[in-house]
Length: 215
Image (tube, rainbow, N blue to C red; front, side, top):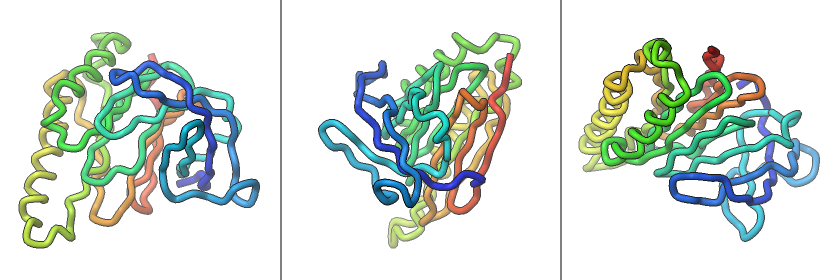
């Protein structure tokens, strides 16, 4: 990506979610070589958590940052929203104007209700005559190449989930999704910065970036 890795140390603070899960308000940003070293893992501690993202928005450290955990969906109309650590899970991202939503789900078709919630929220914000012009982004979905004897089953499930997610978005009236599927062993993450109006992510060593559609 065009941004270097940074580590943010963030104070936990409640942010509304469907699961009422505590999310975060940014309080400090640390760059490589300054303060603590980069952390490669995501972990919770009672007051703080740390994570590394390939997105350098240090100038926005006082903006709200909403982290989306596995099997939940979140939306925001301020700051930055992101998810990371995508293995077999699929992330779906819809953004428009000053609003963005991200879902992070394991077996997509088992989370139909959550997809429906995210789509419904998007349609509250996006004008009806613009829905068909919006291309949601799908990424992640590791095919589990080291699954051994279960390899074919994993690949079948992965392909089924990818197809279901794409069809669900198209059936909801959106344009064909932009997809960034991962291969085994790659990492994947996606974030939306509503300050700079960009959607940015990375699958393996391949970055991607798109503008947030505007009214």
